[in-house]
Image (cartoon, rainbow, N blue to C red):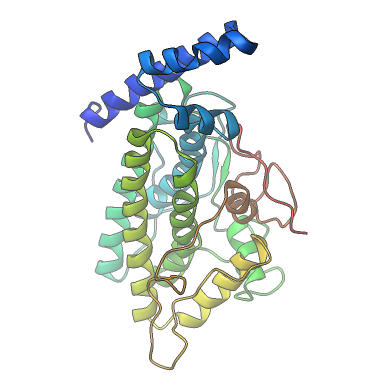
Length: 319
């Protein structure tokens, strides 16, 4: 993927303008800042709505850094499964504590279609990491410690599979063991990624950042649809439904997550939507409930044993 593009150039310009505004506000206060706000935002290319969003919620950079943590996880899983290697070292550095990857191995695919899909998604996820890091520049967070082990009975894949009832106590779920296990492991991530970007979209104030996030959302939705379709074709509706229920038990009291089987016999549910045909959203806290594998408000666990890097790091409390 090219390291320079019009959208990346625009993202850099917008980030520089926001930093100029923040620098100004740190040096002024009270009535003087209030009177100057219209002039400053106009000179910097911003608007009143942008200022309100930035003061009342996470900044655009904080949101994209949260997404970058998730992209690190997905990219490492797919890179190992498809190619037997992790991300290159030059894509791991940044703000915060850089961590290592525990586990991960190449899948011996017996279905060439699944293997082709795995390699395609692996490339896309690597490109997402590269793009977000380039767009964020010096503010990009480092890759945190990740656990994607398929051999540890206490590892996150096994804990998730046990919660879903797919394995028993002391047993291990290895997403690198075969095609079907890989698809189920991928299914844990893909729906979460889609709902995370959907939930983040109303929080992004800058249209250029929003366009970038929408582009990644579309790619993640394609990936999720692909994984869900192949799972359905292979008759894994029951296992996928159990994973869906396990996810739903972690991320709030409402039942929003959906499996791949429809309400009637012989009916699929490849695209999980609400009654209006709209995909549902997850907050950053809800997303962390799933990847931390916890109903409590915690700052680490599951696939992120030392937590994520950045300010959006605590899961929601549902325990």
